[in-house]
Image 1 (cartoon, rainbow, N blue to C red):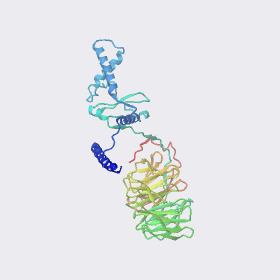
Image 2 (image 1 turned 180 degrees about the horizontal axis):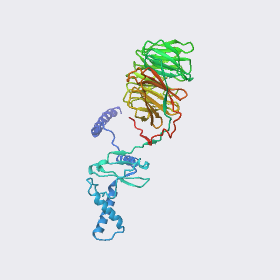
Image 3 (image 1 turned 120 degrees about the horizontal axis):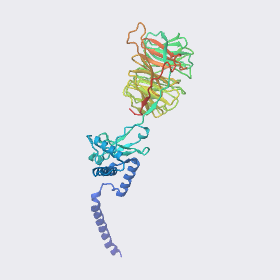
Image 4 (image 1 turned 120 degrees about the vertical axis):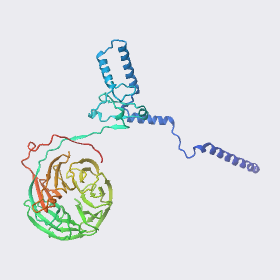
Length: 501
């Protein structure tokens, strides 16, 4: 028995080797290639895709043949001097055909007197999509699109055809009427440019910072000087008054951030860490957190009481000019001279999203007090974004200058102040510019010193403050005598499309 198995095993081994070699030769040509897709499956998939995407679009071959045959029958009846059923209709067809015959562009097999291009832009036609396949491009044929709502036949001339043509929907908004603003008071006292301004949450006073290295407190009702702080050794770029504590925070080009106690009227804390000038400050509305940014291209998040640095938000490649904070996500938004806006997660200290729509430096930003949106300003456009993802909503165009500051009040009035002394007031929802003011430099200043560096609304939303290059502070208020009849809105409608550019 053992001898029989010994003779059987070599035979099985040789047979297996032969089977492996034959299988290798059989499938060697297909080695490394994917499994071919079954023809019926591919055909079903393509038919489903065509029916789903192009159900409202029909090819013109069958329709063209039937219409061409009908036209030939009419011509035959006329040639045989037979009276057709509708003589008036045929006369019109012949007249249109003779006119269209002179056109340079001819539709193959399809007389142009049957089909005309419809240039209406009604809302029912905005969803029509016109497709031209490769075979029709080669044969210079047109497509016929049937509107399922109106059952109208439309043709696109070959010169107008592309791969896909979709009409964009435009939104039309009527502007809301706002009273114009007029100059109320001019306040002098600083010996340098007024670079920043902030209003007390109690609406009793406002604070200004200047290139003369001083911080001044002014009475909001009378405009009188109340107090002056000194301590910075360079230009003060931002001041902010806390709504939760009796603190004032300031930053300057001397690389320092300072905290001032408004009960003792003295400086109580320093925040050290920036490697260059600090240009912007923002306070979190519900947490004891302060955010600062400047020429070192980073945002630093500070614990107010412990004076410790919580996060260093890195990502910008140029000076950070503007920082804003809110209670909800994104809690921190920064704008930089690298023309980018970054949305930050304060918990992890990482960037959530980067907005690159601007082409110029982003020097100012502001949250809307009632909506979940914010506005950013650059010399190319003012842009409106939706939180929390930073979705682009619309452009507000027209202020062609280097915008240094923007402010929004609860009455949907947006104000933008520029380096050339221009002050524009806009209707927030429509983007309608209802007023333009060019500031005038004060006596003793040169004409070039008419720039506006900062602006803000007070807590009542009825007064508007600007800090300017001529070392003055200007206060504006709404014109009480203005009415929609005396200052009407221009008979226009603001149109814009949701385009991401």
